[in-house]
Image (cartoon, rainbow, N blue to C red; front, side, top):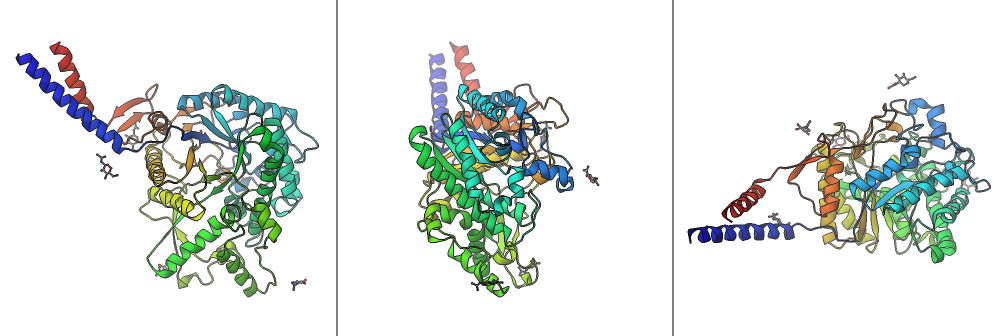
Length: 531
Ligand SMILES: *[C@@H]1O[C@H](CO)[C@@H](O)[C@H](O)[C@H]1NC(C)=O
Ligand SMILES: *[C@@H]1O[C@H](CO)[C@@H](O)[C@H](O)[C@H]1NC(C)=O
Ligand SMILES: *[C@@H]1O[C@H](CO)[C@@H](O)[C@H](O)[C@H]1NC(C)=O
Ligand SMILES: *[C@@H]1O[C@H](CO)[C@@H](O)[C@H](O)[C@H]1NC(C)=O
Ligand SMILES: *[C@@H]1O[C@H](CO)[C@@H](O)[C@H](O)[C@H]1NC(C)=O
């Protein structure tokens, strides 16, 4: 009789706890079943094998040989993560993570050593065939970036992104990829991050091709990228879509601006930041009317006039070009890392060189000192990610979005607690945005592994897998963030209540809020003892 009462009491407690726990579960929102998870890389940053099997030179191969001082630690991507040889291990770790998608890029000069399709390198085609087949055999969908900054050097010598012919060069190259891989690749990304590419490549000159052409080259590059994207889109649409049935988008990186104060000036500064850094690429493709934002057109035209020029440094699109570019993305590939505080005050007078992008946009930017950072330029401020997603939904009629990059750099090896917190917070912000109806279909963490971070060389580590660049075998070892992401992907919820020991052989879980679990287990033990 007493035993029965105890059992009843225990049963009651247990049901109560279970109900609370279920209640808690439903309070957590979770990623929908068809939400896609993946990780991302790019060819120059991981492949190595820079001069084997018939590969031509890219402008980065040229840069690291002719101007090694432009890389912070004097390194190169000659070997990098050696993925040209280790791609099977890459697929293995993707499998380990439990992702069903992998975003990687194809090296233009590995396929077309001289940039043009009159000679297609069979070894290059064979490499990407092998990678794609290995992915598909493991149930992982390839998301392929056609251009992630590896312009063949001889096309660079013909003017590269400053030559309007590049729209043809790029579309011809893209056609070779659709022909060779489009039977299996159903998600194409044309060009990665126009603003970053054009700013560092043609304005500040800290990236290849190191052309310092402030306020001129920067806009020409962006304009030609929009034309090239449009041309490749139309090639796919007209020649391949019907038979291959895939989709094609463009990757645009965006930081989110927060006004430093509530002043009218700072709110204006936010609008300017958006027009130059977001609208310049988004509006021509995704807005109802196409073309650049009016604010951008007017601002650069006014500055150009003031500088005694009779045409704007932002060359206008013809009405045919506006129509040709409009709608040339089936989805937006969104890269987002961090936010900025923006503001404007009188002390800007004389601060920027003339002409320049900075002088045109005429604002000050900084990272809020309270936003956490480990190393590098990515400061954690997840509410900015949420605001950006809401902005894109409201401004561009809720476009379909894949988050094609999100991540941060850390300096703490496998114990990357900063990155763990970063991913939990940014994925929570993404969940909040999904709840508001933002049309995000998938999320790719940058990056699958440590790699060559452009002008930072190997000094900034963005990988969720660690690689010791002195280890000839380039072993891939999961950091704590890889183990936590794996759990998020498996459970599809974000639970802050555990840690993972990255030094334990297979990543031991450590519940940090375990009292609840202990009570449950204790109850079970008591029940088992009674019977
Ligand atoms: C449930 O969600 C609400 C709103 O997001 C939050 O305020 C509350 O703290 C959550 N409760 C639990 C138990 O997590
Ligand atoms: C890089 O090379 C330059 C010039 O050769 C040298 O002065 C500098 O110390 C090197 N830096 C590193 C980190 O090796
Ligand atoms: C603009 O100025 C250039 C010389 O700076 C001149 O060659 C050109 O004809 C002018 N164009 C117009 C439309 O006035
Ligand atoms: C104006 O900008 C200068 C330089 O960035 C800064 O030091 C100063 O605090 C700013 N003033 C205001 C009122 O924000
Ligand atoms: C990992 O780093 C955290 C600080 O971020 C520290 O508290 C903890 O002791 C470290 N763990 C190990 C095993 O080094």
